[in-house]
Length: 244
Figure 1 (cartoon, rainbow, N blue to C red):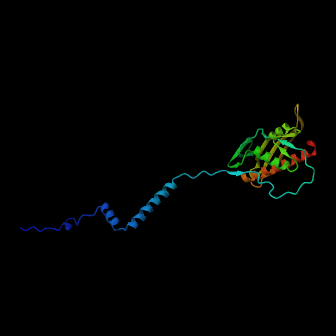
Figure 2 (figure 1 turned 135 degrees about the vertical axis):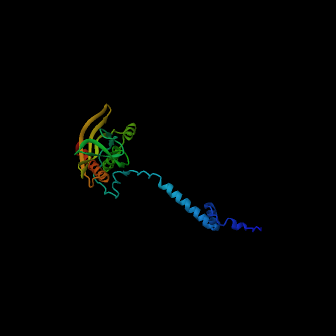
Figure 3 (figure 1 turned 180 degrees about the vertical axis):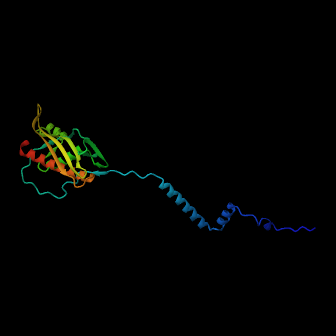
């Protein structure tokens, strides 16, 4: 009996190709550039997936100040200049002298001082108030710091009077859910710097408030800036009318 030989390629013709064999065959048919593009696309998908799993970047608080002040040349004041004044550091009394912008709900709990989460002053309120006050008082007189005054006395100059201030309230006060005002309370004390020590000349307490145009942090910042400007003008007038 004669045995027929079967060609090797026909012996396995009924076997299904394995998945690895199919992929290898397909990759073999793809041009090198096509394979490289597919690899890059896969890497990009993986990178995007990794980025989407990362947490969002934290939102930075918005910074506020009192604005740039006068930006146009002012008309010259022909009145005689006023005596030199020393402006001491403003002492915060009973207020949180941080960069947080604070508010109160007086219709629910007037004693609770709350900070805005995403609003900050560019510097503590005591420094902002002193900076604006110095700008206003300096329009008609020389305004020195206490270090400048000490240097003046060492050179034989006359010791100028000293204005000391205490900041007692600086917050946005909500009288109703949609209504608020910026409230500033200051205590001003003017003393004469004598050889025997400081002598009290005059003292005054100011409470100034200005309405907020919006019931939020930007509205509160604008209202407190306006209240500070009004308080600075009031102190300037007080000094000119007889305190100094």
